[in-house]
Length: 118
Ligand code: HEC
Image 1: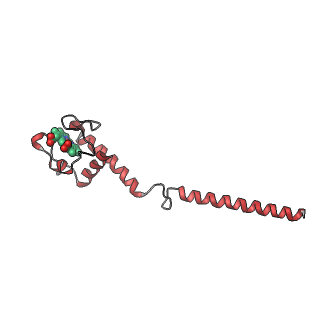
Image 2: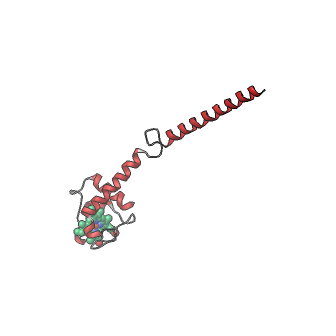
């Protein structure tokens, strides 16, 4: 009887250890940021790089008139509600807003808009 008990106990121990190892493995695979992991997807990385680039472009081209923190200056404060692609591309020369179509690429204007919407 004592021998069988001992055998049963070590079997339970082995199964227990196996379950912990498998669970740890699943946890590792599901949290690693490789192609299998779900924590960081490539599109999220692209989006955040885009708005970082937009922030830099804003600092280079827009800060002078719209303020360092988009709070406005010569031009109005900018936010998601008044970010107008047409105005950025064509400008509003009579009112002092330059046209950026020739100066900035579509992608650059996209990333500035992403930044202003963030
Ligand atoms: C030389 C100064 C100047 C620069 C540089 C400038 N803006 Fe403007 N911007 C203005 C002025 C002035 C207005 C207001 C025009 C008006 O009254 O219609 C304006 C208006 C705008 C508007 C429309 C806001 C609204 O409420 O309708 C947007 C959007 C805008 N600017 C975006 C930008 C972006 C993005 C940049 C940088 C790529 C930029 N501006 C650079 C002066 C500037």
